[in-house]
Image (tube, rainbow, N blue to C red; front, side, top):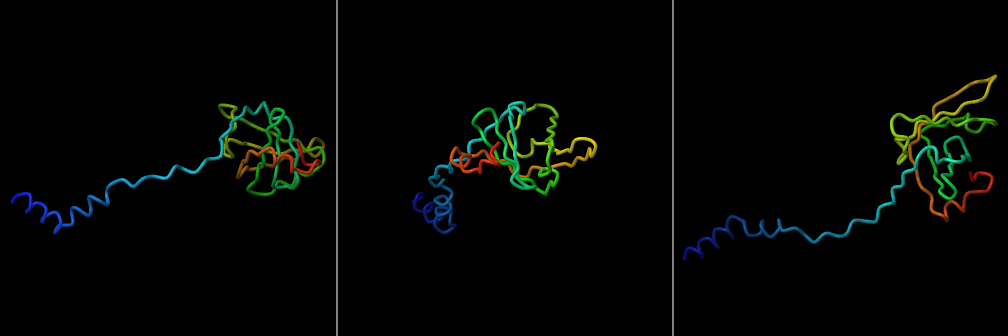
Length: 137
C-alpha cells in the first residue's frame, strides 16, 4: 500500500513528469567548427589590398587570409605604403584581436594611421585561387 500511495503522490505533485523532463535528451553532435590556425607574425610573407577595408595576406608559401577592417584605412591604397605590425607578448596570430596594425607612408609625407582588424578568415585553397591576380599576395 505504501508504494501505491507514493505513486499517487508522485503523479499528483507532478514529480514523475518533471523527472521524465529532466532526463537528458540525446544531443546532436556539435556543428563542425572552422579550423583555428595560428601562425607567427614573422611567417607573414606578403600583403595586398583590393580596397581600403580589406587586406589579403600570405603566410609561408600557401596559406592565405583575409583581414576585414572595422573602418577604412585610406593609406593602404596609396603607392609605397608600408604595413606595420606590432606585437605585445607572444608573436602568435590566431584571431582578429591579435592584430595591431597600422599603415604608413614613407618620408617626406611620413603619415601613418591605425588599421583595426574586425575579422580574420583563413581562406580555403578554392577561395585563395579566386583572388584576382593583382590582389593576390
